[in-house]
Length: 287
Image 1: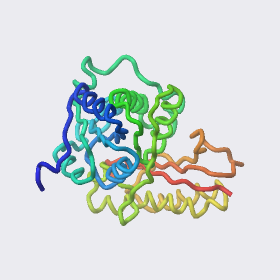
Image 2: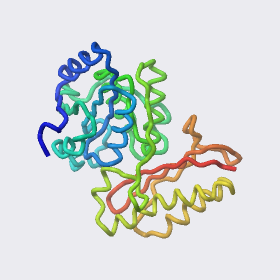
Image 3: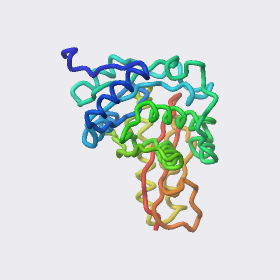
Image 4: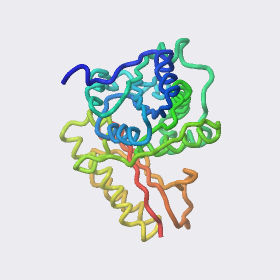
């Protein structure tokens, strides 16, 4: 692979802004794909969409310390910028924005933060206190830095996507948020950077998670109780999968649904497989 095929790297806010100001002055639209690196085919699906809807594509690679709790995997989260550049090679990415923590937070964690509100403490937020405040704060910073026409996110992080869309709407940001369907491996497991933590044994066990969602979807025509029973029945079949939560929420509010609810619902699941915590989601219709 020729080094010339690798996307450029911008490590400073000033450098990225200068590049994008020039692009916009030339009439180009900009798409941003925010990531924490450790890129895989799921990220490339986001990049492909970005390439289709904008003239200039920027991929940010930043492991945001503000969204990790004290017992989470911030220190061991995989980081390999050169491998990420190689993954992006040939996919039409104009530049990678890879700032250090000192560039994004020069005085340490910022005092001014975006709050996820009550929803930030529900579902995924109940297990990861403060996580979504950290996510929204860094996304707000990235959108302010890059000022993209479009930002592209993956459906797997469904609660994050909902909160980002709400933030953009509530704060009158001009960026459009596009969402790309979850990309799955041949065994059905949703692609995730954390899948790299799974050995063969735990990889087999992790398949229980998409299997549970598939069972839930198949039971949707029989109502909420049947959906929950179907998912739990699959999850109970593996001693190596520890369920954190299984929730059914309204797609338009992300509030838990009532027992008599009928209509579209999003199933959310989080489980620990060995020491690795995974999330997944699917959209279903409750009869």
